[in-house]
Image (cartoon, rainbow, N blue to C red; front, side, top):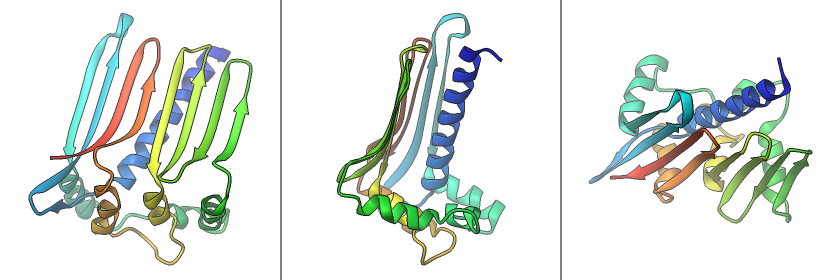
Length: 187
């Protein structure tokens, strides 16, 4: 595998992880009069030009997940049990006075993991690939995801943590040949 193919695969894996996190985090429930929707828009340029748009009401995702998993999803804490105390790690990050958590500066790539008062963020700038990736997750959602006092997710509570942030751009990828946006919107 060439270095360029490796970087492309790494970016694809980063994007898939971000989308998976969004799909796990963004689960359902309609409030009186309004509905939260998950929106995904992928536009490719060049030889493989095309566009994919996905618009899914979170309430539909809830029905699908409840049917498949009996209404429960495992939390990241359940998956990591016995390996790393992710809840404790998140609490340490949450309590940090500094906004900067991690910065990696390589010859052709800068990765920055940071937080501000409202959001946990991951930014990747790859000059070799001409790509920028931005992931933005509300601190309240991170608190919910990594709460060590419970197992699994309550869909209504999870969506409640997102509702105050809508509209919210969760993932944005801009590159020479592809643009990707993942966001939550209220209608």
